[in-house]
Length: 297
Image 1 (tube, rainbow, N blue to C red):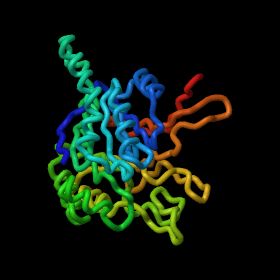
Image 2 (cartoon, one colour):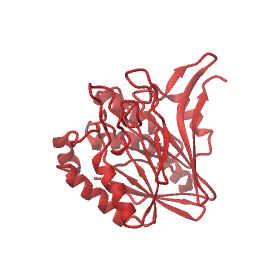
Image 3 (cartoon, helix red, strand yellow):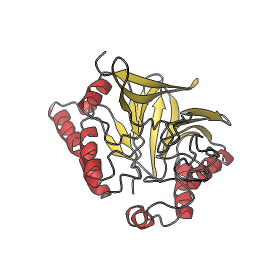
């Protein structure tokens, strides 16, 4: 459905904020905090609301008030009318654009877009990267989540169809350097329930990554593309058994990030903290760190 060719750029190293699964944890404080940062782009891994269409749309409306550009990946909790979801993100953003036009400064306009089966360009001081947004609404596991919805909304009726769509995006990418953006992660990093994308919610566990994402990564590498990173969420860092998954891993020169620290807003001993992951991208490499922004300090 989405075929954006948007390009995000910076004069030097590119700064990307990865905001993990929200589950309604987003408000005016986040808007203020991110407005004061030097991020060039925000990426939301999905699950905006609390499991109902109304809550997803309400959070999308709040994200739409951002003063920085953002890409929003719909999660498995975000299977509302996709056009309505896009409209909620765009409504306040559209008002921002009208204001930028009236002030004769289109540079003031900051696009906030839904992503999924889409390509987006990134330029970090002359270092080009293609961002490939993978399958939206994934619940993980070996089958296609919400098959009727996916067929109606994205014309994707099976995992094979999804693989073909992702391979097409790889082939169309303008850069040899790729970063995959997803709601979930790939197969291959979930042997145990406490692994990065391991199943912790049913007996026997098992790998709960997305097979189509794994195939797309493998295809890209076979075609000589350099996969710099794979960024997702979905599988909460704190497992149902009370263990912590790793939020970052490097395998075969690919950086993997799971940003789903849930809840992302929580009370500490001395303050209320808000979580996201900071990723720096440049020709010299990638750097990632977890960020906890204090609400009052």
